Length: 154
Image (cartoon, rainbow, N blue to C red; front, side, top):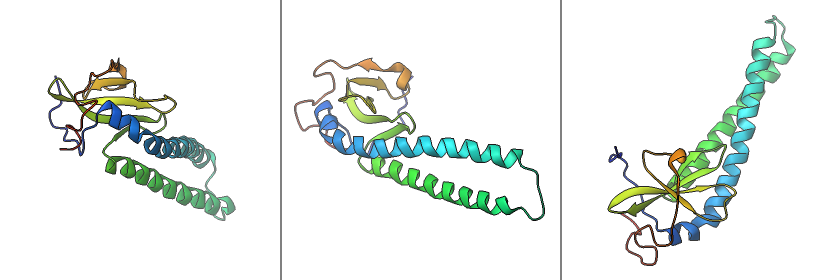
């Protein structure tokens, strides 16, 4: 079953996805680093809050509240990184892992060209509803328009 409800802002070819990769890589690196930090701080903060006794004159309570406020600001920054990527037409799928999908046309249907932080270029694809587990290796020229400008945008 294929998800026909997804409406991409833009369709990519393998060449176009790889051409945009330096910018996408830079944003994704910042996103992944901040996401890992936020997850770690959120877990630590939850532990500290749950393991502390409630006292009337809690000196450390204010400090924990400030840490929580700082964490909320960083969560907002994460949302900004995600929006930057979406404005480029790509779909961030895993902040901590640095997973990015580029919508593309293959065999008359929309699929995702799949890239993960650390990979040198876009080397995989998957159906929209398959996710990372359904990744398949790209063969040269698989995505329509890999050497033409046909699929630039919708």
